[in-house]
Every structure is written in C-alpha cells, then in structure tokens.
Image 1 (spheres, rainbow, N blue to C red):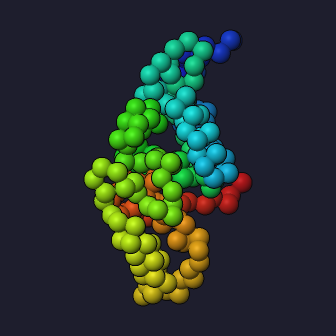
Image 2: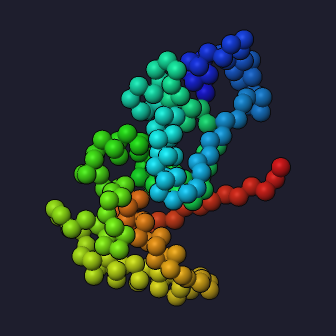
Image 3: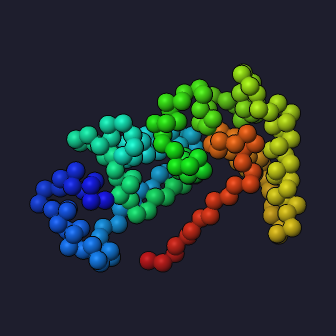
Length: 189
C-alpha cells in the first residue's frame, strides 16, 4: 500500500509519513476495496482488463499515471457473477496474472472462449476428452451433487452450465469438480 500511495503522489498527502505514524494502529490505515461487476462474459473480460491494470505484476502497470499496485494494496476484492468467474478463475489458477493468460494465447489451458460450451474442450491437438466424455462428465457431476449424502441439493440446468464453464475457467482436464471456494458474507454495517 505504501509503495502504491507514494507512487501515485497525492497532492498534500505524505503517504509514507502517514503509514509510518499509524503502523502500530492498523485501524487508522486506509481500507481499499475493489469489486468487479457481473454480466457474464462481458463482465469477465472487462474485469480482466481492470485487474490487469491494477496488478503490479503486469508489464508497465507501475509506470507514471498507471494504477499497477492497487490490487496488491487492496484490503478487499470482491466480484459478482461474470466478474466472479474472472476473479475465481484467477484464484483457482494459483493467482495467475491476466497478462500471463493472454501471453499463452491459444496454448493457455483457460479462457479459451472461442470453444463452445456445447462442444467442450477443443478438438484440435491433443484432445483431453471427447464430446461424449464431456457430456458424461457434466451430467455425472451434477447427478453426484443431487445424490450427495450431505443433504438435499436441488439441481438445474444452471449446474450443467456451471460445469461447462469450469472447463474454460479452471486449469484441470476434468473442469476440477472437487474444487470449491468458500464465500464469506458479512452483513454487519
């Protein structure tokens, strides 16, 4: 946070001095929150652009006038719907960078949005699963949710859609059905 605030050089505010003065009282330090909106693929792509700009690991993002480091200075990062797809995908893929995904181009194991969810992973090169295996995976994984001994879980077409998305968002040959993300909801004001 200190590096980011010193670099953006807010007029009349000595960030280094302020942080040094309040180092032992973290409640006096600013909280920075970033939230990525929902809206499906468009939100994912728009959020990815913003995430890349805010990430100090992106080339030239910490140049004068740029916002690189804002992500690392953040206390909270949240997302909704398509923005959540982007944020969850970054998280599930070991906090990779947007730039790294883009630099891999067609060789990237994720974000190959030209691949139709109805067809599954690409059928060029080494095909990880056939279309039949892909559909069997979608159906059996959703069925295992419905039949879970942990409780009565309703399923719908949304579950099948979500499983299809997982093949595009998570770097695992089977879409990582065993991966879960814990979400914290804070209703305090």
